Length: 134
Image (cartoon, rainbow, N blue to C red):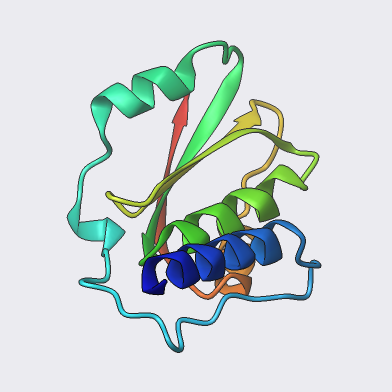
């Protein structure tokens, strides 16, 4: 019975996350997490980065180091926020490495303050960024 209740609560949580409005923000209150990832201390996963680049041409990629991602809900919130931005061609959030990869057209200006603001709205911190042109 306890397992069924746990599964039911997890499903309700996922449903709520998928159907939340733009003004809903993730709170870590009540969560128990083993550790908090510091993206600045970890390197980008090269295989994941190569897969991200597939299909991208004439693009630039912002590699953002994020502090405070502790669960999949954090990662999905960031992903959902950036998918709404028409300037973003592609996004990948690597929870295990604390990295967010954001692809933009070469002619787009990448504004770190804008990126930081969107990530802060989701309850995490963008601590720095590197841009790679393809």
